[in-house]
Length: 80
Image (tube, rainbow, N blue to C red; front, side, top):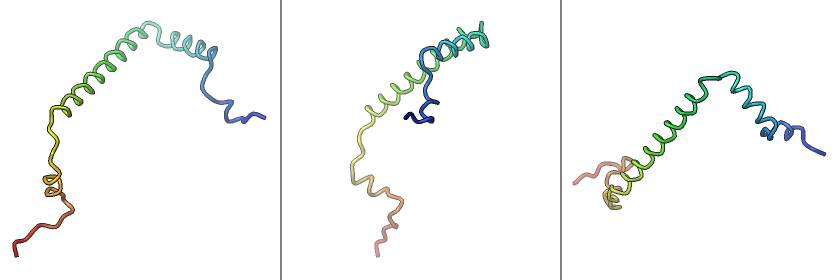
């Protein structure tokens, strides 16, 4: 016996064709512009990821002692 919840799942091949046809009817001429914008945003995202990765690789690792001294949970040290 099949579960009725699973019947409302991911669209299959024929359903994708119907969805794409509706998208073409709705967006028409703007569809290439939308695809171009999505492509540019993906390339900018990848460029940003590469920049962050290169910054992380360039930054030297902090010694363990300096991290422990800078801990905000530790009470201030007194000389007395």
